[in-house]
Amino acid sequence: MGNAGSLTDNLELITDCCRYSEGLLSEAAVRKKYRFDEATWKRLASDDPLLEAIELERTRRIRSGAAKRERAQQLVVKACEVLGEIALDPDASPKHRIDASKTLDAFADNGPTHAPTSDERYTIVINLGNDQKLRIDKATGLVPNNSEILDVTPQQAIEVEEKDGETW
Image (cartoon, helix red, strand yellow):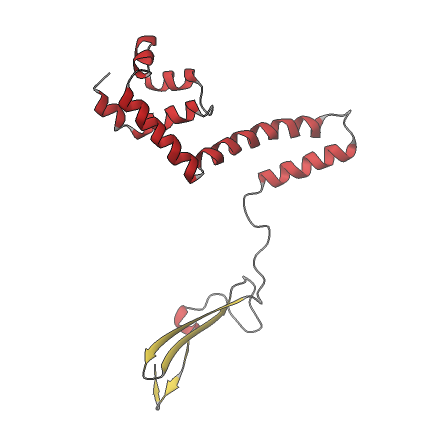
């Protein structure tokens, strides 16, 4: 199995043991992944440096929100099964079937459903010194405004201010 130092350096094992202690992984899954027999599993339970590393990682996962996110992800997957049963149940009320379908559709969404409106803008001003500035003012939307062409190069989109007769 190796010495205790190598176990406490194995972040993947420590994280999987945390997931097991949090109820996110089963004992069988951890034992299968690392091919631990019964005797090895019992030795792990008495390895104080390993147990301390697991507890520290567990605290870190709680504080970072990783444990909460993983738990929520598992519950959402289970909720999908329940919602699917409701949506497909011919004896359920039509309202419940529609609500379940809408919720499943929201779960399946992989991003924004519309592009930003073209009236949203961003402005970048670079101060070149001596009262000279480089200004870029563009729409964030994907739809061209009036004469704006989508395939312009950045150089064509830059408006340069002149100062003292020089162009920058």
